[in-house]
Length: 432
Picture 1 (cartoon, rainbow, N blue to C red):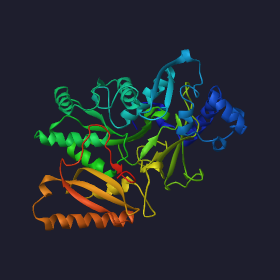
Picture 2: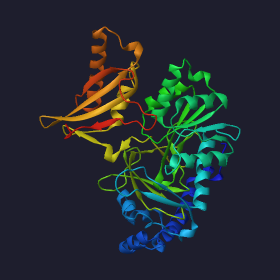
Picture 3: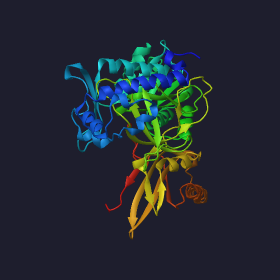
Picture 4: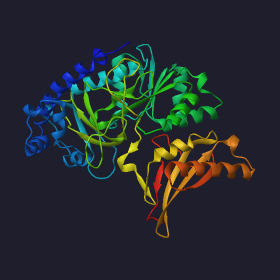
């Protein structure tokens, strides 16, 4: 096994031994913040009470609302002069969620990103192009410093301006991209419009994340851009990118357990679920000084994958994010996640890269409509062909989500496109 950090080679016993020591230290560090000082005292928990990793379950969970209510600095555990940077959520209403970092926090974060990139074959002689936004968003600076830590020639391209992205890729021979899945599809479509194919580009690796996506989307990205696309997971409350990453075997994402403790629990009871069962991911930081967070409810749905990975790393693997607990749609009494719909749509070769799910109320009954773009070569004048495709999509969606949706087939370019995160669900209920 090639590795960037020796922690990648640790056994389960070594990982858990280090986790316990760091968990005690983290509880002690967190006690220095006004929020956790009160929360832990109320729960009757002191650092000395953490005698095993199972004792973490006695700590009350932390929620996004807790972070908002403690804005701007209620969770900070060090004097202000030790803080060197903050990142904040992109929310436009209410108080944002803010995470503060010391220099040691940033160094640790860069190391985790560099470790993740090295694991999928990125090396110092690669040219790395970052298409994520910079500023308060964690994806840009987080992965930028990791790439530089690894020693890559780093291009901070930022989001959008697709023609320039393509020019830079070709002129500077970019070999590694950091890109969100919906923009990767957009970039692939832009290449086709210019008469180019992914095989003509020098890119060989894409790091994708920030949006839940299906395996079908990943395969399309790889085909359109002519590279290998590796799934990643991060959230600003835990740093940003570099929390969990696929290895070259692409069989789930390794959570860096020397820096985080992951739990997967039933969202309603907060009891742990069995390996292989989907639940809500709960995360605890182990190395952060400025703003440690205990048992953060991410609201992201995933599962632990059983067995050992062929790469040899013993850090536990989670499946791709299947959606968010608060993304669930209830239609006619049935729980539906957007990812279920995407998985069906992307199984049809006739379907393009863009679709929208609309929710409306008609006569006090909720209805689900899926508008999906069809590739130009398949959008023909023979209505019998399109009607047959429409019925096939409806049938497969009904089998998957147990609700019969309306399906509208539209030509490529009919639905709004964005060079940022795609808006897939539009809820018009009560707004007509």
